[in-house]
Image (cartoon, rainbow, N blue to C red; front, side, top):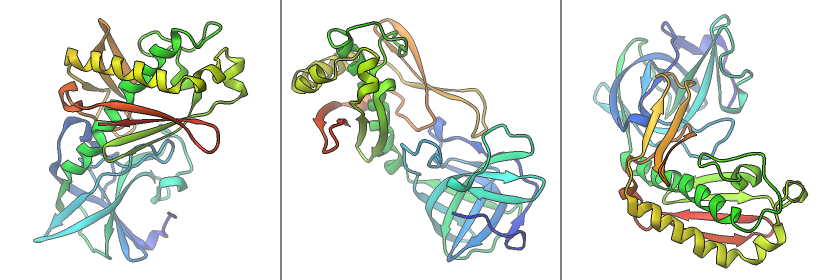
Length: 297
């Protein structure tokens, strides 16, 4: 997606977008701040939104789906992206075209709703934003499940697959294989796929790659047993927010093994482990020789 010339952009007073997607708010009224046409679509920025945008840095969770309603008509939101507003030059950048990092002076981070069709809107006009809650939940369940799976995998692997101490620890204080080896992560409806690179760097850190690969079936069974034990405790899951802005830090939190844990995460999640019934993982080798962990709920 590319920036648009000033003449195609209509704006009101622009402020950083306030987001509510970690608060289980799926519908709200917002004011139009920016709109511009891009091909046969319209880019819309409002002052607040319940929509979760896909990250341009780590696009693990897809954008929410839903509608924008105004003047008696509902328009589909076909994509939702992170955007950056250049205050001095009155320019909107979206997705991979964002040229700066967060907290850059003179820039605001915003949520960009991409709408089907060329729509004209008055600035400061009130519109109703409606998130498809069922679709969002289909992503929230495996995303929360994947955090538990990663911790369970680390716990199982620490018992016999490290030949020396690891310097990086996870939220439970375990050797963080997941963080060291994770190459990609993709959340899909009802599943999350994490790919772990089994390369020389991991071996140098002291992990026994070959032993792990040879024992995938055994590790899978042990991880699923650990997940069942944790789910039986039936703890709440919360999202701690340091602010309402898109760039404010957010943390996934729960209680495991008698310890309160906190993991940085910008996605959407369930509010209780009871929503993760049937949580199980699979482990398999892919064509590149890496290991995939598929978390299903």
